[in-house]
Length: 412
Ligand code: GCU
Image (cartoon, rainbow, N blue to C red; front, side):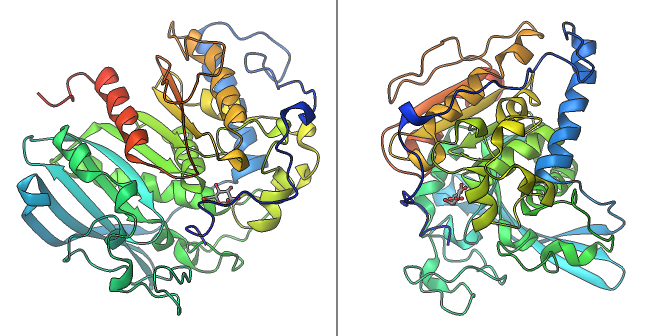
């Protein structure tokens, strides 16, 4: 389960830097036809080539959506978080024909502003886990069993209320003038391999093939549907919606940011394999490990690269490059070797040429920084001391990064 994996350092993986194979990364600025990419227009073409490869070989393609989505506010408070925030819960009912699925959005907005910049990200265990506030609805969806959280029959209860509050420092975020929009990722697609029958998959009727979407692409699609809603909500500044995610949800945030340019900034917290980390390093989690443990996360084509990372037509630096010229932040934790901190740094580093095409600077360093030394201009990076998690320290850096890139948003 998500929480059980938090501190895991699985065995049988390579954690020895000297055993990283030599590799050559796919060239970011060389087109499929071998031509060099220099200007922004050429980049736009190259970007499409790279995007198409990720879509076909890694995350999978989203089928056409023929349904509709209806938003209904189901709760509203003027005095949340001790008076700091407005809090709303919104049900997004996704419907196609006679099939429907409800997704619940929890929205905290600073009372101090009219149209707030917002961090949008999934939570792992239900909206009621991000806050101790007693009146946030408990997720009715399937959740992974978890003894610590008192979940034994795949249903969340009061026992998990507030259990992930440390991952969502709402006081900090709201008092700095930012809002938070969060939803449970299992509302969109429960995180287990069921042959793509449940979650929103039930609302699509296209047959699957080897390039059809896996769950990461499905979760990313869900974030875009939330964005559709946020664009219509006058309390949100839709030009300043920052997509954020930790771990598998960090992979999701990167793919969402690559797929949907309405996200003004992208934050990947310890996204590791299939996220920011270079696959060719085979350090920590590898393509074959991830495809074996989580056969539903990627498209079936990705399995062709099990133990053959060097044959991938892309590597993850190119995923980060797809976000250019928007600011992107990649973060690692020192004890989280499974996610390959150095590989994440190198993913960020090797995305720089795309930013350079826009005259923008990336990390502003060639060396991986020491812990607690955030670096970077349009590509932010830090290594935090400690384990696989998203903490107040991490959020502080993201808030600083947002203040820097969106100075109009910084709390006045
Ligand atoms: C597992 C998985 C990782 C993932 C992590 C998480 O450890 O192997 O790829 O990032 O779970 O989501 O916490």
